[in-house]
Length: 141
Length: 141
DNA sequence: TCTAAACTTGACCATTTTAGTCAGGTATGT
DNA sequence: ACATACCTGACTAAAATGGTCAAGTTTAGA
View 1: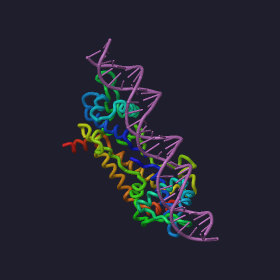
View 2: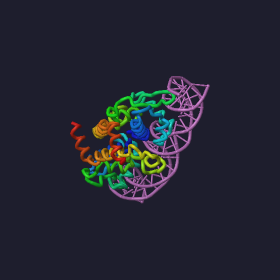
View 3: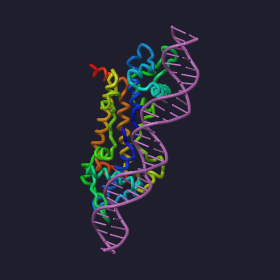
View 4: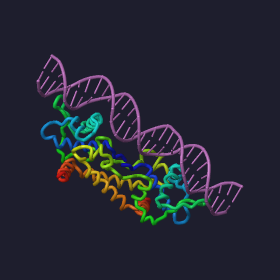
């Protein structure tokens, strides 16, 4: 299971983007400065977000990125999937030598990981970018 | 956030242990054979489980490990904590240069990770070793 | 038209984590 | 005494992480 800085950065950047989106495209440079994330790293992340149609890019001067969907339709699942943060806990099935199938006992914990995965994914599927923006406005005072 | 094989192995081994526990101590060798986990690696894991008073050890011939608590009182949280699988997602606060405090925006996603952490921990706190054993018996046919 | 801002791509890399192995022990039941 | 099983710590190969670096292409605006 992976849930690391890359996913966190992606979310931070997208929330930032959503804030300033309405008027002009937002440049990665601005996001980099505001969020304290390396520009080069942001480029890698946004390249993936673009491939997954979460953002659109506008090239040239005054260019930048724009959300490609309504913030309400961008779920955390989409974001994490885009940047390869897989919420996959079960390492059974894949190889017949290890885990589930290799031994007679038949992976005791298989059901557990399935359940956990569903649990976490549900959380992510129910949280959209819009929720985060609202949440943040409330607590900013 | 970490949730890897070590934690999975720990759970597998403990469920295995709980099954045969009633009669004699269970040797790591047996668990190793049944679950297909390296003996040396199991020893590392059980060393931690012992420090955290989840299992007891009995040395010498016919020795092995025994659960130190009722399976109902061993929660997954306890197991994961014991083997250093920390379900910690927030990397803010720690350094003033990065994340939360470094930038003016004040880490936009802070609340999210807090919430997620609670969500996952709740899942783990409500699942005991006993649940797993029962669950497994049911599905074994 | 020239240029600078901004996206685009891909290679590279240091560090850390993971998932172990190896080599010695020490304790104890038979 | 000796085999079994726990105990301890050092070591390590491979992968993941969190980036950096270099060399572009595109396009708005002066």
